[in-house]
Length: 510
Image (cartoon, rainbow, N blue to C red; front, side):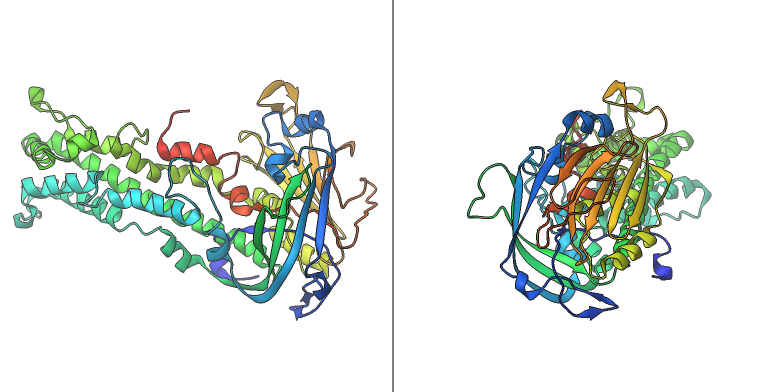
């Protein structure tokens, strides 16, 4: 879809996406039809793990990689384990995909009860940054320093155009900018949702699901979910591009805040060098301003009188920029620095995003082959761009990802540079591998087959797909594997790294 607004990447909408295959029904939409018949309401479907070769899994993905249960949940690493789903109802409507699926997917962070979903993650970062300039906060480092400068210089009465006051004006200006940016940081969930939310035409299905298990299914399902099908196949790539725009804005806004604090810090160092007397007055004024209050809370030592006193402003600002979590100030500001980790490690590049999408099943309209072709052509993945942080693999592994479509059969290829060793087992050289996913003509995905790229040997197989590479597809009508995984875990806060991200928010040393 040609749209100048999306020439530079935009934010995604990810949520619980599921897969299944059925007969067809329906309403033409841009040449595509929603493929679930009315008779499917109330119908139960099952999926099953057919084969799992753990040794070969490790030979291809690595011993430190996710296992099938990490990808698919439940007992996905046990041959014979079954999953079940029951379709309750559906509704054709405009889907507020971002607000209803991305921002509200459950996220469990230990010891931080206020973090429950992506909304609260955004708010946690917002609160930490905003608190630096909030006079009522216990971690109001930027505000406290700026007020200390104000109390000393009486800057409202000074003419900073005069040469003797220019250096002081440099401190005041940088302090004002830093305090303003912290106080008015906008990337909370309300701002993000208002700016990036977009209603997309599609169908919401309501489904009860039972995770893969070797036991009898309970009467009560494990989840009751709404699954979105999008009418326009181009929206999947637009979702990825919107994600990249959101990434760029997060980076730009956090850059502005961080760089403004650095500039404020540098201005103190410059003042100390050029006008030591003024610097000494400001240094003591800040100590007086904080006396009896925040110094104890911040656990920052007061300046000593010996040798002209410590550089108290730098002590505080250096602490604010050091996300170790060793004192309350650092615990509050480390979320600002953690934005880098979200961007660098959690927001995927193109192949990784498409991989996550396919692991979710990418529900399609019919004709399926044309719908899939539109999606794959939009992503334009050709196996020439190396990526790291591939979902479920060791973060350091370099992968050249490729995508092929043969009719309604998608093959995701994972190729390592020559002689790549398993980072978690240096004695083992990793083998290239691929995932094959077959779609039925009615638009639903069958099981997933993991196999060696060169030999075709299968090392993981789920029901719904026959043996490959002969492509003798054997999809049972009305039956497919229903793997429900929150896409927010797969794309933004992966299960493998969610605690790692939490540790960074807390500043815990690993």
